[in-house]
Length: 377
Image (cartoon, rainbow, N blue to C red; front, side, top):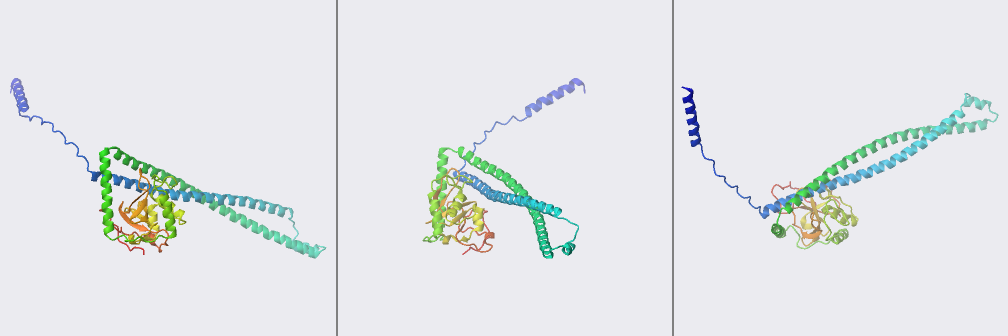
């Protein structure tokens, strides 16, 4: 085939291909994003608040450990200073004994001195004094050796305690950054909503709480009549009531701001019964009681990980420091998914803190089931 014919065939093939090639499809507009439902927004917002509170309680737990470690460092430093001062004094006493021994040294044995003495009784008395000095010297040397060992051990423990303190401080900083990041997520979500959405959001959440409260009440989980509080429980409750209207602030223990466990721990400390600082430790270490036995002053714990706590006031209500942006207020007991209740002014059975009781209400989210356990009576 000549070159000219080949070029014509190729040109024809290209032309046919162009004709037969499919026309580009018309651009199909993408569907507009569907507006998220109020239920979705509530779920997202509650999830973010819950994550922020979990991070806050982790921060609070580290802060408590850091306080204990700071106190340990201070105590060890004080003991080490005293040991070093005692060591200095012991070395001075040992030096004086060494000089006395050098000044009183002689090649004549005490027996020969006794034979040659003009006054044997005086020699015996002098020998007694020499023996006493020797015993004192042995005691001084022994005390000096012991003090050296003690000072060395205290120095080692003080260094370790300081290292632990620095490690905890670094962990606390990471946790503080984590809380701030969670709260930033909350702020961004709220900022993306219109005023109408915020109103519908609040109404939807309020209706959800009302429904949960009604279900709890009709289930018979709560006593029909309130039990009488103990004197300490009444004192703790009075303290909590005086904090009504104060702002929530994560990590705060008062007196101007509080977080949830900061409020409950301070209230019971004011009543003369110190309790753990965090809601998780309050749940783990305080005696658990059935909801039916609740009396004013008892603590109500929420969420499967025990990351929120409130104080029972009676008639199905609690005082709580709810969350960032809100103030301390009285809420229905079913304002959050219930985990259980604890009583601070009742001695816990041995090993009680190792148990994890099942939530005592029907308002339990999917996937939040806990293994059943016997309630403390």
